[in-house]
Image (cartoon, rainbow, N blue to C red; front, side):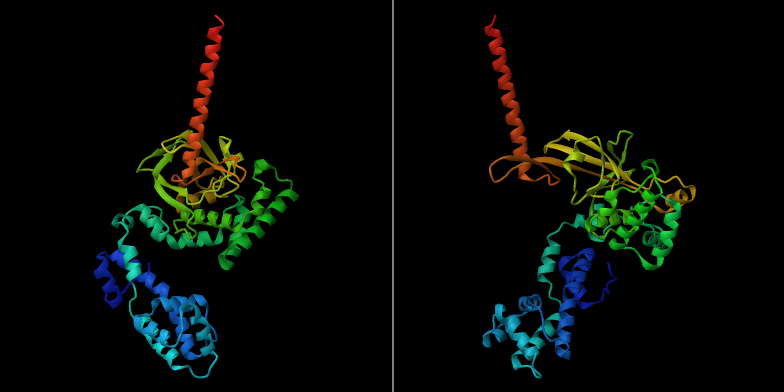
Length: 395
């Protein structure tokens, strides 16, 4: 959150209505973000720099207008649908018509004061507890207070320079020296990983020595973003792609069972997990679809919602180099990634059943699957009864 001047008149009015400084700051920041773009466009119109505006701009302006502004448009036979075309015609003229000058005056006045009724309503409808919990911290700030780095400048440098994709010490140092000045992004990642894999293949590096797999060179940008969020959280920095949600604290035992404990590590689940069915059929999976966990444990079970598979992993850096290991222990904050994916049932266009997995516990198709399983079990019991009856008839 940006610092807010507590004496700002807009902020004072919001605070008076929502009666909570955190909520007020959120609403105030949203107001700034929402209207900054509109203010810039209006400024460009006034200065003559804007030669045309988008429909999104005129729609937003129309929705902000007071009754006075709407009446101005109505008097000139301008509706919301024609507002964009009429305004763009005026922008090509050397002198605006009177109605345009009136609208500019009106919208400048509106953007110069608070227009926050909708935002305030949405903020006040939320629960106060949302802003004083780890879940709330994750939602608002992208990180929990216990995950946050105590040496942020150091972690920023590590995050910027290190590509967390290989444990080769020389590679890490060489690439890090370049990335420290140039930064890293998706295209750079793919280029780097491809070069490293080609070198591995050329030098006959065996899988036991951590040769980079081919699938790692084919990651999508979405997968890369998930990896980056994990790397940021490990460094105690806020995630920026909303990959994870906070679900609690705990430990993973030797069998990779999650043990809830307030003394444990932070536990996160994917907001939008992606798993292939073949991975789900094993006890140990390789996370090729999210591209975050590497190897992870798979647990199968049934709860009040339905049949599920649970992914469990500790996100940490498993290194043996003593120098890197010392740096990691001093700067990184490992965490647990876990979540449940439930079996659900749908039907294709021809009425054939299709089983699939969903992370939405409220998905009604989970109940469809549960009902189908229950029906099959009942039928099997009835079939078994018929067999027993026929056997009894033989004696």
